[in-house]
Structures are given as structure tokens and as C-alpha cells.
Length: 110
Image (cartoon, rainbow, N blue to C red; front, side, top):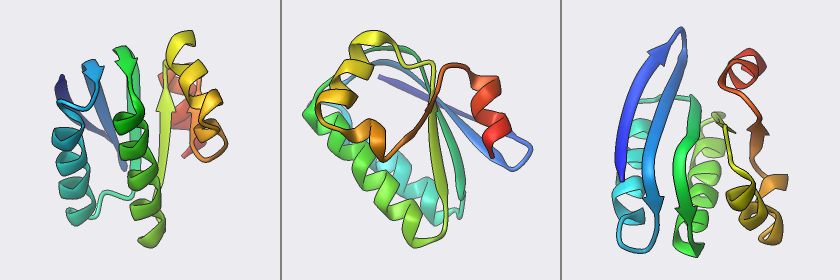
């Protein structure tokens, strides 16, 4: 999995590429912890290039959501494909996370 970041105004865009699974979810978790320590409170995660997520990846996003809440931060997701949205719906995570169809719509929500 590849993780790239870009600042768009006061929103930190995190672009992920690959799979989010047990083998690499710790890398993602550590990257998120670093972002929170740097006080990035508005985070948009682009899922356009993510092909798979397992339960450890879902747990990482739940943890990120909780950690951001502690600092009055907010996270949105965008470009989530139907397969991954199905995982979020089965686990009911879509009720916690703000999920938008496009990057532009997500950016406007901040």
C-alpha cells in the first residue's frame, strides 16, 4: 500500500493506493497517528485506488475516527468503490464515517 498526502487549504488529503489488510494496516495506523500529532484536524481519505479492505483496515479507520474526535477533528472518505462500501455497510462503519462519492463533494463538506 502506498500513502501520499497533500494539503488542500486546511484539509489534509490522504491518497491511498493498493490494499488495506492485516499485513499493512499497522503502517496506515502509524501514519494516521503521526498526522494527528501534527494536529491535522481535517482529513480526507481518497479510496479511488483501494481495491480491498479487511477487518484490520476497518478497525484502523474506526480508531482514526475516535482519535480525531478527541481533538475535535473530522475525517471524510471519498471515491469508495461498491465492494468496499459493502464491507463498511456490513460492519456499519458507514454510519460513523462521512463518505462522499467524489473528492470535490468531500472537500466542500469541510
